[in-house]
Length: 87
Ligand code: FES
Image (cartoon, rainbow, N blue to C red; front, top):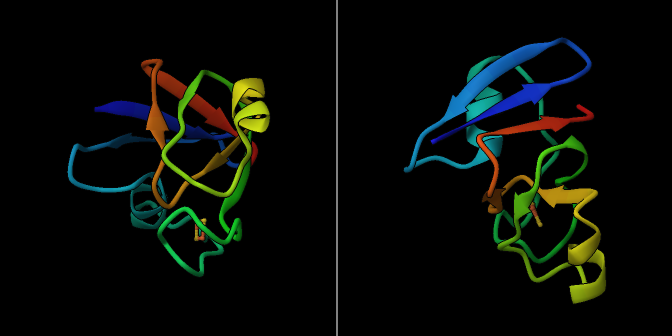
Protein backbone atom coordinates (compact mmCIF):
# COMPACT_ATOMS: atom_id res chain seq x y z
CA UNK A 1 0.00 0.00 0.00
CA UNK A 2 0.96 3.65 -0.23
CA UNK A 3 -0.12 6.93 1.30
CA UNK A 4 -2.07 9.64 -0.44
CA UNK A 5 -2.20 13.16 0.93
CA UNK A 6 -5.02 15.47 -0.16
CA UNK A 7 -3.24 18.81 -0.10
CA UNK A 8 -6.29 21.05 0.30
CA UNK A 9 -7.28 19.53 3.65
CA UNK A 10 -3.97 17.92 4.60
CA UNK A 11 -5.87 14.65 5.10
CA UNK A 12 -3.87 11.49 4.55
CA UNK A 13 -5.00 7.96 3.75
CA UNK A 14 -3.34 4.60 3.16
CA UNK A 15 -4.53 3.07 -0.10
CA UNK A 16 -4.90 -0.67 0.31
CA UNK A 17 -4.16 -3.23 -2.41
CA UNK A 18 -7.82 -3.82 -3.12
CA UNK A 19 -9.08 -0.28 -3.42
CA UNK A 20 -8.48 2.63 -5.75
CA UNK A 21 -7.08 6.00 -4.73
CA UNK A 22 -10.54 7.40 -5.42
CA UNK A 23 -12.15 4.88 -3.07
CA UNK A 24 -9.60 5.64 -0.34
CA UNK A 25 -10.20 9.40 -0.68
CA UNK A 26 -13.96 8.87 -0.60
CA UNK A 27 -13.52 6.81 2.55
CA UNK A 28 -12.05 9.82 4.37
CA UNK A 29 -14.72 12.17 3.10
CA UNK A 30 -13.03 13.70 0.08
CA UNK A 31 -15.31 14.02 -2.90
CA UNK A 32 -13.81 12.79 -6.17
CA UNK A 33 -15.49 13.45 -9.53
CA UNK A 34 -15.71 10.21 -11.50
CA UNK A 35 -17.45 8.80 -14.51
CA UNK A 36 -16.03 5.75 -16.29
CA UNK A 37 -13.92 4.45 -13.36
CA UNK A 38 -11.80 2.63 -15.94
CA UNK A 39 -9.14 5.16 -16.83
CA UNK A 40 -10.77 6.21 -20.09
CA UNK A 41 -12.72 9.46 -19.67
CA UNK A 42 -10.36 11.73 -17.72
CA UNK A 43 -13.07 12.97 -15.33
CA UNK A 44 -11.08 11.95 -12.25
CA UNK A 45 -7.74 13.47 -13.25
CA UNK A 46 -5.92 15.14 -10.34
CA UNK A 47 -2.77 17.22 -10.26
CA UNK A 48 0.20 15.48 -8.65
CA UNK A 49 2.21 17.80 -6.39
CA UNK A 50 4.70 15.22 -5.15
CA UNK A 51 5.45 11.55 -5.82
CA UNK A 52 5.42 9.44 -8.97
CA UNK A 53 2.21 7.82 -10.21
CA UNK A 54 2.01 4.31 -11.59
CA UNK A 55 -0.21 5.19 -14.52
CA UNK A 56 -2.91 2.65 -15.35
CA UNK A 57 -5.19 4.86 -17.41
CA UNK A 58 -5.56 5.03 -21.15
CA UNK A 59 -6.66 8.67 -21.11
CA UNK A 60 -3.24 10.35 -21.06
CA UNK A 61 -0.74 10.01 -23.87
CA UNK A 62 2.63 8.41 -23.12
CA UNK A 63 4.17 11.89 -23.20
CA UNK A 64 1.65 13.17 -20.67
CA UNK A 65 2.22 10.16 -18.44
CA UNK A 66 5.97 10.77 -18.53
CA UNK A 67 5.45 14.24 -17.05
CA UNK A 68 3.94 12.61 -13.95
CA UNK A 69 1.95 15.72 -13.06
CA UNK A 70 -1.55 14.30 -13.56
CA UNK A 71 -3.10 11.09 -12.30
CA UNK A 72 -6.34 9.23 -12.98
CA UNK A 73 -7.32 8.42 -9.41
CA UNK A 74 -9.97 5.85 -10.42
CA UNK A 75 -7.35 3.32 -11.49
CA UNK A 76 -3.75 4.51 -11.24
CA UNK A 77 -1.50 3.81 -8.29
CA UNK A 78 1.85 5.01 -6.94
CA UNK A 79 5.48 4.10 -7.52
CA UNK A 80 6.53 6.15 -4.49
CA UNK A 81 5.48 5.51 -0.86
CA UNK A 82 3.57 8.78 -0.89
CA UNK A 83 1.62 10.82 -3.40
CA UNK A 84 0.53 14.37 -2.67
CA UNK A 85 -2.45 15.39 -4.76
CA UNK A 86 -3.93 18.81 -5.38
CA UNK A 87 -7.39 17.85 -4.19
FE1 FES B 1 -12.83 8.06 -16.06
FE2 FES B 1 -11.12 7.99 -14.02
S1 FES B 1 -13.27 8.19 -13.96
S2 FES B 1 -10.67 8.11 -16.11
